[in-house]
Length: 431
Image (cartoon, rainbow, N blue to C red; front, side):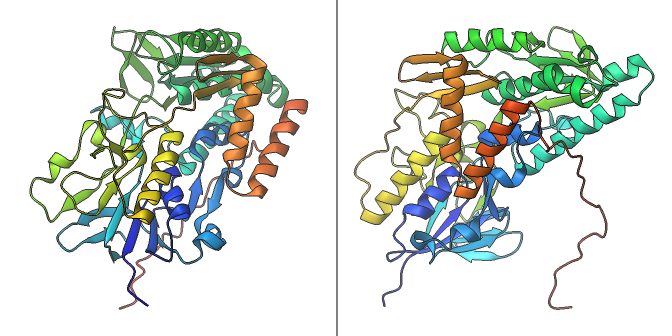
């Protein structure tokens, strides 16, 4: 049989997994590289953080996915990408070096602290399943600790939460915390009062959900107010020392826990073996491509999803970093590779945006139509449910949501922490 070109896909998110699914395995030898051995569902990270869902409900093992008929000939590599050597055409991970003929970069984004690296050690983030579990554990620990704290001042500080960033992720996290305050605390922690909890949502622009309609912003503002969330607009966080937030106008807020959802940047890695590699990267560390998702100046290299960027009249700052963009770009890239034709540029079809605020509360902008309240909430649940991988995950999530809706209760508020020791030694077969 003729030798098939080797396609290496970096990242198993929405974009990478769609390429993996649609690529013709008879034409290409396909390899997937990811730092985790599972695909996760970022839109529901906040539900893990708020104890609404178990981490396994929104995660799907890659190797199980590769057993399916359309992907059984693909191979998976566990590893964090460190660099790409274009001269040798290899990918270097923390575990191995992998050669490629064609490279598809789809590693997505990570947290952007906008030049304030000190925040890394002080704020909680929500860009992975592990970060969602960490936030869940901290919220539960603070509730348990506050329940036995006699000093009302200390108790109040323990239970003062702030969310930085009023986009969909920030609104959903703040809404989940608002539901904790309104519906959970008095039921699960009789020693505490809802008045012991203070929740702040801080947004740098003049409205929440800036990328959605004004009607969606106004609805979100009203619904979060009903959940007793304090909202501050037109203010950015300048610093946080672990105890006090300082805003750009000098206002200070004592706060025990800060969740950062204010921005993202492309997952960083090095490109070597070419002249001036810095010219490949644009705003937010995203890789500059043409309108066919091809990285400019690199033969046989493509960047899709959140990590790629090309500017157009319709999107002067690049396409939005949304799941639908990644999925459509992944399908486009696979189709072009299968046909070996890149004559038709990638065209994104906007299917709308939505965000949930809480129980029976959501907003959606779909093809010029604005939905809110119970209707938007049902639409949000349906879209997210069918988007999950695996029937088991769909059924489990549906069961958890139904149970929580009718009982106002969940069995997932477990404070689980992994053991620190023993530390893993070097896996060196050479002794």
